[in-house]
Length: 73
Image (cartoon, rainbow, N blue to C red; front, side):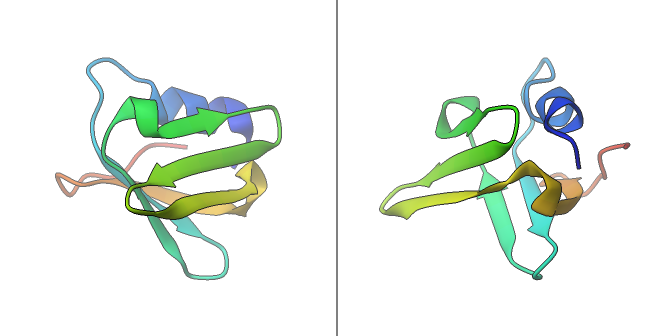
């Protein structure tokens, strides 16, 4: 997924908690918009108390909002 599409899904108003599925199969949850930073190529997700997760935006294959719906894109 491009960084621009990822930003659209993450920073929509109002914010909706979401789960990103990475191509390796790992899920990464974002429960608050202050817990994620997106550059043109990298994504950093804070997962307190666990260490932050850093990955390339292209590694995201799908986004599911935690209310059960899927992001378009």
